[in-house]
Image (cartoon, rainbow, N blue to C red; front, side, top):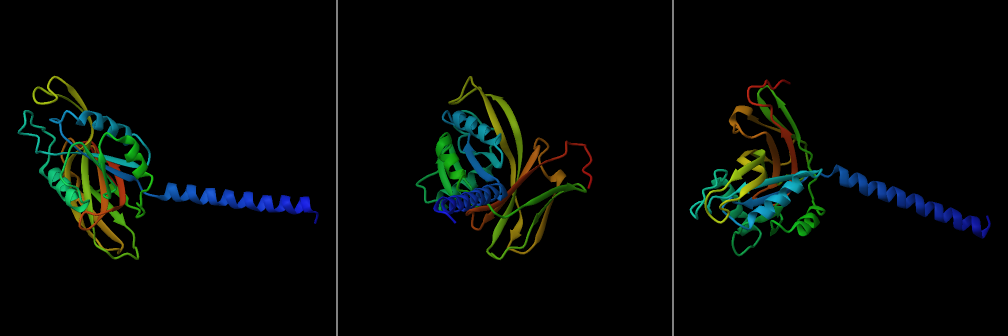
Length: 250
């Protein structure tokens, strides 16, 4: 074989290896579960509307679950947020401790349960999303009047909480008092109920919740698999709920 032919053969092998590597990385990215972005926000916070807008952009992205948790500690400061939940405030409080923060703040974005940013800092949020370790497939189904979630067997038998977040995709809210007085707020993926469906320890498991147990204004449910106590999120999925009064067949 001539020197030129040898070089061409080596070049061909290198090119083929690069193609396989690129394909493997692509397959790894597409098999990874959705990144989860939680925004802690309030209608009474004048710094929050830009973060709400960022969340709306993230919500439209593929392989992303973006959720707005409205906290209740702004309610006594001029405008009561009727989407606020004590469970949102408590969840943020736990993150403040687990992420080593000095205090809770709004707007705050938490990515995959492991990193905290100002909620309007889209660049840093996107960068953190690219490092997602979400690898546990979560299969969801609406059948026989229930939401059912299936998790496969895994070698890791640590304890994880399986959460259900029922949310309203979009709302417009005219604000009459407080820091946002006179503004009409555009809000996205507002969590209307957040609760545990049970604990997963690596065995193949099924979890369920009755559809009629979710709020009437919730159109979707996201299921999150989170290491206890409120650590990294390793699995997630979302599903549309049937409209009120519609049959949920198998």
